Amino acid sequence: MIKGLAITPPVIGRISIGHLVQKKDKWVPEKDDAFTLTTQVQGKDGWLLHPLHAQFAEVSPNNKIRTIPVRLLFNDSDLNLRAEFSAFDRQTGRPLCVGNGECAKRVSGEGVEDVPCPTPERCQYAKEKGCKLYGRLNVQVDGQNDELGTFMFRTTGYNSVRTLAARLQYFEAVSGGNTRHLQLLLKLRAKSTTQSYRAPVFYVDLTLRDDDTLAEAVCFARSEAIRFQDAGVDIAQFEAAAWQLLQNGLFEDGEEEIPQVLEEFYPEAENTNESLAAPPTQNKANAPSSDTKQIPLVRSARLTTKLGASNKPEPQAA
Image (cartoon, rainbow, N blue to C red; front, side):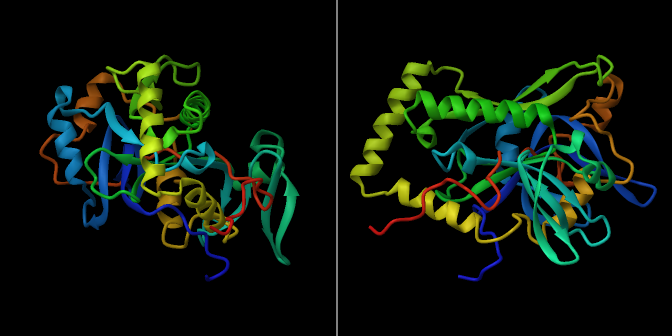
């Protein structure tokens, strides 16, 4: 295996709650009040919509996707949702410092150093370099026809990361570690904060399907776990391999992805509130129509793998 390259879960599409618009020769994020599913193919006007987007839009009120039926690839919450505090070089796009609130890896003239991570609010380096929370969630969308592929949801929103982290830990606990067999919904929610000046701030949540009770969902997940075990599917080895592949590199994002991350989350003129909706009169004009063929890449949502010292198990011989 090539060392220094983090191997991440395979991505076959993206989920977003915003898009990029061009203003004065620069692309800046603009927030939406609905999900968008895109492919990994980009046209001259932006990222192409995934075929599943049209399917979900057709059955959604006003063609706005507010819920997506999903499952998870892993039982381990920290594999499904990975987040860290990240600072990037705005010129080269390379990571400068990535930390988890306790320790960080920082690029210096002598290489990569291990340094304390007091969080961006308490770190002068973070303030100078524009460090912020950056999360990645991998989910499997119903109908995707790829049992190991995922849709990526990236976010720099505190509300989304905190909510998703809590939900995943809860689901892992109550299901007895069978999270990947739960049938779930990725759901868009709204709230108002002092920073949003009473305007709705949209964030992402993860819930059970509307018709499921917790007991029914857990019962189904446990029966599915037994079925997979009887079929010889080794989830423990699968997750151990996933951890080893992620830790194969110092930083998760590759050179191809970093320019997109910078463009989407770190523009020069940015709105620091998470997914802040425009006033109602503007929302209609900005929302994607049901017959849109292309849209610019949308803002996505992405807990922390402990840098350099994970306590996840190493793969064992079968």
